[in-house]
Length: 326
Image (cartoon, rainbow, N blue to C red; front, side, top):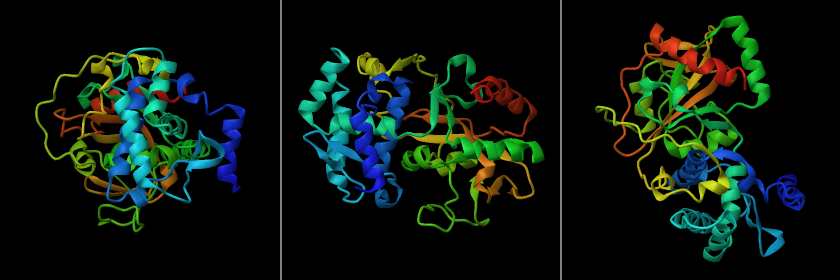
């Protein structure tokens, strides 16, 4: 078998991936978010371009074959398995093994797909406690998001010592984040991945102004922010399945999710500023730091400016212990 497929078999043989979903310490909202991003990418008219990577999942009935194979893509079967993952979430009673058993009965590929969704995520994404959230973002769905591999982070820190850095927002439709969490934030200008125009040239588009990035995320209206829902404590994936329905339904029952990231960007001469639209042509000079999610009826503040001293001070208060001690 080619190397990628061989690696999948090796992981399963060693038992690494088979236990990943129930053992990894993550938050219920993180699991929700990963599934919601997968759904958005799979339901997109652009799925053949943006649903990347496509799952490599071993057939539970035939360990020598792949039920989901990147070289033989079957979006319809994948959608069926994902629908089963989400419908099982309504069954909130019993142990994780019991939930897995119910999932296997509904669709033998549902649980393996969920394992892949969790295990294939290459980003470090963690729900922030209320004490470490940026209150001016007006959502309780706030996450630390480090989507750059260690080598890129190292190059970023070297550049930061030379040129310094600042913070800016990056808005993108939720359908794009399935790929970003696995491939990193890339320069999509003039490629098939580009959705919006590149009026100011090739590069990663950013803005210090929240309303501009909200626009790229798909959010068009800005009202009085809704009160945040109760905080959700971090949970294992196993206990995630056993939570009460109000917590479980978070994200997955919302068909209108908007996401924006707060990024750190190197302030070298390469960073082109066209008013409040910034373009960074060097991918190594942009690293995600925070991720904010807004549900139906939840709206953000259009007037946040990352260059204001009070905003910068709050970002550094939160980011100081979260990022540089990670």
